[in-house]
Image 1 (cartoon, one colour):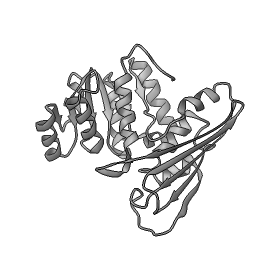
Image 2 (spheres, one colour):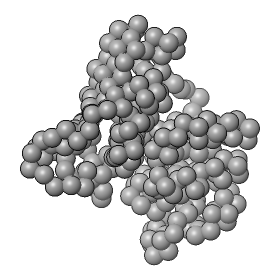
Image 3 (tube, helix red, strand yellow):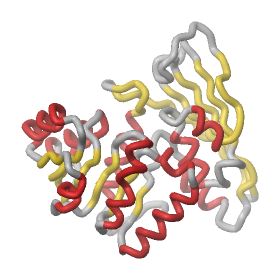
Amino acid sequence: MNIGIIGTGNIATYLLEQVNENQMVDGRITAVFGRNVETGTRLKERFGMEFYTDLDEFLSAPVDTVVEAVTVDAARLFISQVIERQKDLIVSSIGVFKDFAFLEELTNLAEANGTKLYLPSGAIGGLDVLQSAKALGGLKTVRLTTRKSPESLGMETDREQVLFDGTAFDAIGNFPKNINVALVLAIAGIGMHETKVRIIVDPDVKRNTHTIEAQGDFGKMQLQVENHPMAANPKTSMLAALSILSVLQNKGGALRIGN
């Protein structure tokens, strides 16, 4: 499997380390697209892949799967073209699908082009439970409570406070760089307007914590995940990068666990 990455940031570097250096995937990252020539050149020299600043040239390279690892705004510009060029796509900027119509559009495009669209679980778990619970419309309530350090939210405070309490739709609009987990939870569960989200800043926490509570015909679920942040970027959880690596590791496997 030849893998391409859109982006030259922390997630791209982590994947290059794990795939090209540590051989944690049955494949290799052979191409990276980005705008930062200095960073891209440095990555090329270290990891031995090709670096492109032209998207068309990047998509013309012999890659089977493309990982999007940029900002939400940048992702919206590029990902449709990936699908149109018949590449499988792994999207890390889940916030790009706040517009559900765009998610449906991209899904239909993938079906028409015979490609796959992957949404990694990111910094949370329990998605299989939610999808199973809603199979016959029996999922009633879903709430996400996220507790983060001031540093991870890019703010300063010496006291705990609730920053937001409302729907996933509004949470994503107000915290697009920090609450992608709410969107993937809503997609797997009962939707953005029905999924409830509370965001708490807490100067005493060392790890970002996500607590998922769900109730329905299946019973009740409560799941808590405490995430270590990436060393190079405290706004991104380590589990988010690991979830992308997991998709790559399992992509071609004969055994599939869960959904």
